[in-house]
Length: 115
Image 1 (cartoon, rainbow, N blue to C red):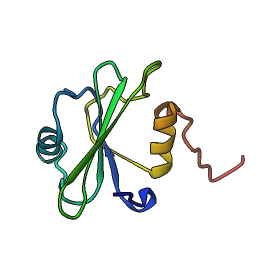
Image 2 (cartoon, one colour; image 1 turned 45 degrees about the horizontal axis):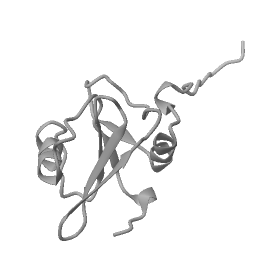
Image 3 (tube, rainbow, N blue to C red; image 1 turned 45 degrees about the vertical axis):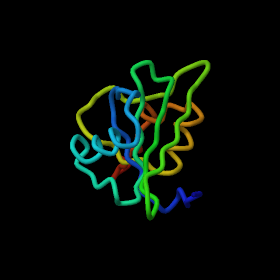
Image 4 (spheres, rainbow, N blue to C red; image 1 turned 30 degrees about the vertical axis):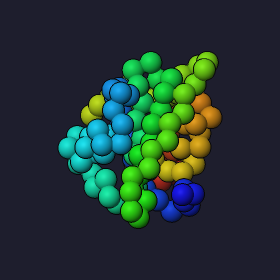
C-alpha cells in the first residue's frame, strides 16, 4: 500500500537493532521497548549497528508491512543514544533517507529583546 507520509506519525528507535528480526520481532519491539501501539498505523524505523540497513514497519488495515533500504556506500545518520523514542516529521524522514544529518542541525533560537 502507498500511504500519505505527511499524515502519519513516524517513530524512530535510537541505537542499534538486530536486523535478523522480521515483522513479528520488530512489532514486538514497538510494543515492549518503544511503548507504542504497533497497530496504530504509525511508521516505526529501525537501524542496524553499522547504520547501513534501515527497516520500517507499519500496520496497514489488515496486516503488517515492512520495507528495508540497504546502503551500498556511506551510512545513515542515526542517534546512538537509546534514551527515548524519537518522533520525526515526514520532512525529517526524507532527509534521513537522503543522508542528511538533521540530528545535529542548528536549533531555532527565540529571543524576546534585542538589547
